[in-house]
Image 1 (tube, one colour):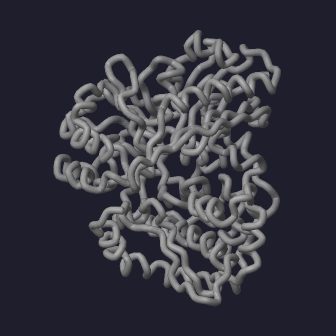
Image 2 (cartoon, helix red, strand yellow):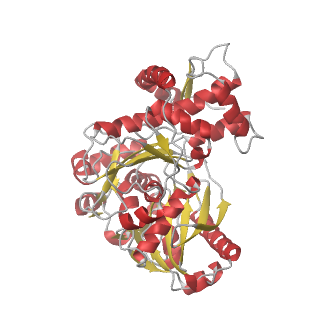
Image 3 (cartoon, helix red, strand yellow):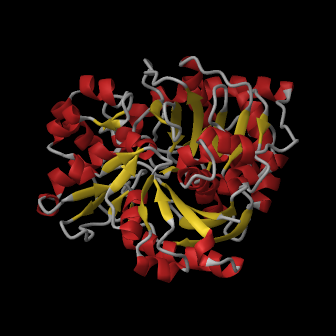
Length: 505
């Protein structure tokens, strides 16, 4: 029997899962690490923490499983998207990584828009300049920390930094590179024109691979620490959302997925690199050669509920009371609406200045109502993205759900009602869909399966249970969603003004 490792480098922790060649989960281990927020809206991590977490978790699953090191044939890495890791000529870290949910880059985004031009961005990255993407973060460091930027020799995405530490190779792959805003997405390679405009080059950004291709092998000294061998291949891997797409079988037309973790994402397969003329969702490369996907993210999806729990349910570590309270409130949370913009927003607003809000709060409302409003509001924001995908011509009939939020039966039914479409789940630990996705890529890359699609068709099975929309609730939610949708443009300038109030504590 052969085995494959899936490393899922998230915002809160790195999780490693060991699978056999049939996709059966053998062992899992996770290590948390700090998030640094030195200023309002900033979000950073130390890449060294990711590497140490990888060493610990791989060793832990190998010890748990008892399998021989030489039986692990391949390894894939799933990673948080849109980050920026700056390294010097020796591969040493120059500053903490700027993460996907960092909110400092609005001004730098406008500068990079002026430098490159939205015409080039639309032509190659299939989106205008966006503050959340890596290009704006590179520009921020260049403008605000020039003494650091002048030493930069390599700029890597989070998972690709981990690849570098494991293999010594500077490389990336198409799905994660799509969110840098520097990739020529239709042709699946770096855009020479964008690189020239930003004074970048391929040596700085790393070679681009397809997601299932072998990019290197684990270094002997690293393999020894992990309990595997230096014959273990490291494939391209994938961005976290793309990996979840593979891990839930969204590798063919008509399939779509929603994942709820720290962020929340709606993801749908596309056979062509179609440009969203409404500029509300991204078109990125799929970890399947010759395929793409539509995607949009809610910055503070699961993060909204975690923020709510930490402040008002500090002992409810498994969210049991939260789910009970939410279910005890009425649909619409008794006419209370929550806007989940705690750290600004990605799709469809792409505004890092907007902030979370409760609208309609009255003396009648209870903690249970507010809890339900948080869960409803995050799901309305996900529906915003689904609407954008539908407007691009992709109209899935069912939605596959994964991520930590999928553990909640209440949230599964809530999604079915708000989307007004059936929701299904993979017949596995859906929290580990991203890890399974990159393990599948490793199995394909090392020859266990002829293609990603073939591997998914053989490995991914869906549960028999289907969460069907309740017609009465769907009708209520449709009305409330229209009010939710109308609030953003009314509050947009207020949020900006509030952030610009000039006073000091």
